[in-house]
Amino acid sequence: MLDLNKIRADFPILNREIKPGLPVTYLDSTATAQKPLAVIEAMDSFYRRSNANIHRGVHTLAEESTTLYENAREKVAKFINAAASRQIIYTRNTTEAINLVAYSWGRANLKAGDLVILTEMEHHSNLVPWHMLQAEKDLRLEFIPVTEDGLLDLEAYRQLLGLGPKLVSFTQMSNVLGTINPAAEIIRLAHEAGALTLLDAAQSVPHFAVDVQALEVDFLAFSAHKMLGPTGIGILYGRQALLEAMPPFLGGGDMIREVHLRSFRPNSLPYKFEAGTPAIAEAVGLGAAVDYLQQVGMDAIAAHEHALTEYALERLEEIPGLKVFGPPAEKKGGVAAFTLEGIHPHDVAQLLDGDGIAVRAGHHCAQPLHEKFGIPATTRASFYLYSTQEEIDRLVNGIYKVKEYFG
Ligand code: 7TS
Image (cartoon, rainbow, N blue to C red; front, side, top):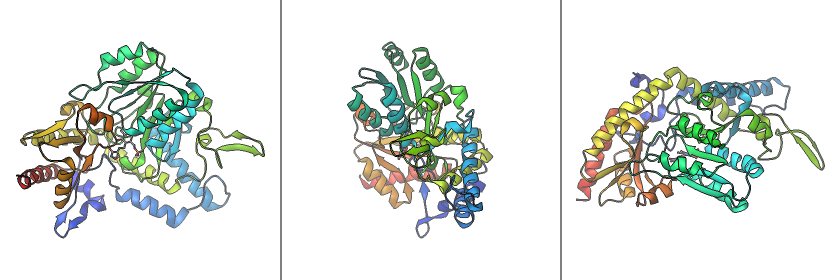
């Protein structure tokens, strides 16, 4: 069990009042997580004490800053059980990590007619890079269908595998349905069919233990800001042999070993993929976020969110006219996207905001998924380690008020 009072005291923003006497009820952690003091202070201390550019100086500050930056990489490597920290590439976010794979690996390895399998529940960041590459390379894209209850249709997947895909790229957890996909099985089947795999772990790494070696995944992408860390930094993990064979993505300083007027030699891993001055303070913040998550314990966080999700679904589903999308709680993480009969999802979110309740409305960057269900938008509440039953009660009461308002 989590000590929720203790945890909540670590997050200054959770004390924020939206209006005098009206506390914030933050139910939008799927979009971005709030930050504990440990992360804020690590970044503050970096700028106060150690700020300098990395890898380029012999002076004390440059050495300190380089050490802090690289220590954070080690922490991330251990956190997802990567075999070596050079397999951890700093990017800006999940989106950039997926684009890196599409542009570097995809451009070098895919040709006209090659098949990439995605799913109908992907975030736009695991769709559009492949659309763009398809336009360039004339690839074939196919999609694992989503069933009515929000699961991937694995029978259809097996059939698609018969077409000889080169890559299967999919999300470990849907940011709308909350579905936790059977990643290990999907990866194993892909490998049996001779395909590589990319796992969008934007919604999984923050919420439960992810072990890249146990999964045997080839590429994995996630964002610091969804796991208590700062914005502006994300991670691409890759199998070492793959990363070594890939051409650089962005060119410039730091990613080179030597440069001449008409040529360059790329740097070794991970620097080959880190062009220009990176997000140094953000890496330090990410390292502090990893420490914080590990101190609380990923299994305890997952258990807390699971209990909350069960409670939330039970309470939400008793509201007449409310439909939650996605599978039952046992197959789902802490996300509840819903529609309320006769009321636009944006109106629901707007009225809830009047009660200090922060939820999101729209297609949540998963427009094809909403099209599949024949709806333009949903209202989405999402939970994290600091979320409470009381906040879910406030949400439910708020929704009853919205219904009253609209008669
Ligand atoms: N993949 C998934 C599954 C996501 O949920 C998101 C962000 C991304 C990729 C992209 O992450 P980024 O850090 O590169 O932006 N999801 C959301 C969301 O659900 N609402 O706002 C952002």
